[in-house]
Length: 316
Image 1 (cartoon, helix red, strand yellow):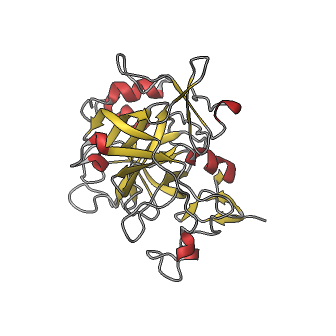
Image 2 (cartoon, one colour):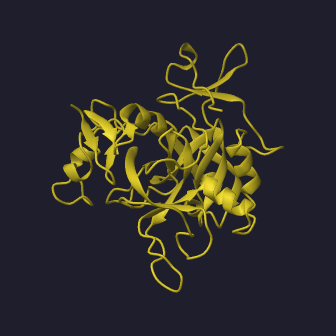
């Protein structure tokens, strides 16, 4: 019988003998949703997380870009411990009693991967939702004799489609920091939903933010939050929401910008019309996260075998 990554605990994507994250995310689903996870890097600092949501579009947290030149951000995909190296159990099981200081085995064998893309421009920065849609520029594009343009990543990503919150659990995917403030290899945490639609995670106003229980530390910012169908529902933003004051609820937990809930609130006029609403609505409706006139690169993002294997298809 396989092991379970407990609710609210983080485990490596390829953790040995792990069969389920929480009660709702089997190992196959975890591998799928983590395949699109990107690690944001500036210089030598592995700083935050993001999700590849189109062949050249990254979804991330707005505050990850605060105070830096967007084009200085590189993105690395496939930064995860391989199945033969990833330790079994969650971070607590590999901490020696201090989950904030896990044992060296927790990240031993991290792969040597270099960034495969850089941020070319910010397509949309929604300050209220604290999210960013960024256009990527791939570094090593192979052009086949047929004219097909291919980017080979360590594993073929399953580019997720957007979806709505369903069930009582979500899965957060990302790269939490270690004690030296460097993001670790890809990890996944199944968490119980505490509030489906609460206010902004730094204020008591607005709507469109889901709160879930579980550990929060830097590096998770910008990581994808997924439902049980493997659809990305939002972006991880920060821990512990507003607690007191007139009319406030104790929104303890980790907040994520819930794209479907936010779009619905905007449509009903519960919050002001955000500039990103048309993009989110178009994407949720089955279209592209690129708006008319924005640049696409028509590249096929695949795995290490390149043209020898079936390229990952864009989910629609």
